[in-house]
Amino acid sequence: MHFFSVAASLAISTALAARGSPSRSLLQARTVAVHILTPPTDGTTPAAGTIDAEVCSSAQVTAIKNGITDARNMATFAIQVLGVENMQKSNGFFWLFGGDGSTATPDGVAERFKFVLNLNDPDLITSTKPYENSATDLIFTCIPGTAKLYANTVNVNRPTTSNTAPTLNLIRLSSLGLANTESYVDAAQRITTSGDISQAFPVSNGVPQPPIAFTLVHEVQHADPLLDNPQVNHFADQLGADGKRAYGIKQVQQMSPNLKKLNPQNYAFFALLAQSNSEFFDPQKCYVGEQLGSRAPLQCSDIVNGFPGDFTLDYFADGNDA
Ligand SMILES: [Zn+2]
Image 1 (cartoon, rainbow, N blue to C red):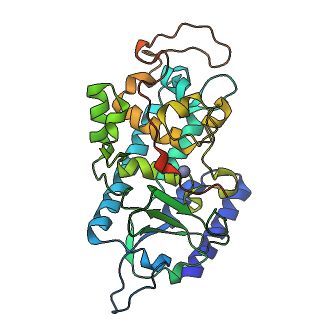
Image 2 (cartoon, rainbow, N blue to C red):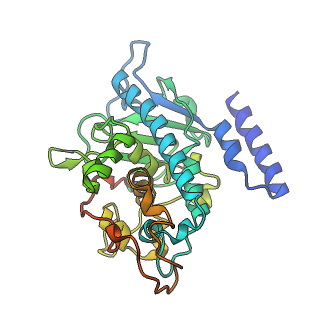
């Protein structure tokens, strides 16, 4: 069954490629099987330190399921905002994806949000074994204890700093990454009300906590099974002007323009701000003119010097850059 579906999807992909069709994302939406790892029901206990020990509690399962739904809604809304005519001339697009040297387009950005829509409804599993070396299965696990990161995405055959030969596709969420179970819409509403982006990330023990959907929009950009063509589409976190990976709101605006469109966090911030302040991305209201060499006046006084607020989200250091 398992191998049959892999073979079938390859055959269909090849047929589509032969016709020059770019619509593999539609195919993927049907073929990526998403799972959540839960405790064994046969009385056994997985060995500590193994992936199979990264089981999710029923509360965590609920959080992940809701987070997936919320992330799809977040992506759908972002795609809608990106569809406005001339949106590349909006002040908001300029700060997150534009500027001299950028070749980002609204359609290109929307493609990345379509990958989020490939996160199908998950089922529950009790062992990762049947999914080893499958290109079409993605497993959510829950890292036990307190990890100093929100999440960690692992891909079959793509080495990371800690795993030279992964055999599973994983999105591993920490208790920190699962801490904020509110909808991204509620987090965005606080930005709308306060004008302060950091309000979307409630701080606990000194650490900002993103809504799960925000984290998932970021992690999807690293997750090979959700991408149309992992060889081309896989993203690693990019370095900002300060030489560190760009996770903060100032960093993602100030990084080299040609890297903005390659950086997962720019997409997460775009989707959040599109919800909280869609006017920033409306060329009729916040017009920055042509991207390259424009001297047109910036007409969006709220963000004439970039989005307000300066905070970092260091716990997005998710180890994909090996
Ligand atoms: Zn990352």
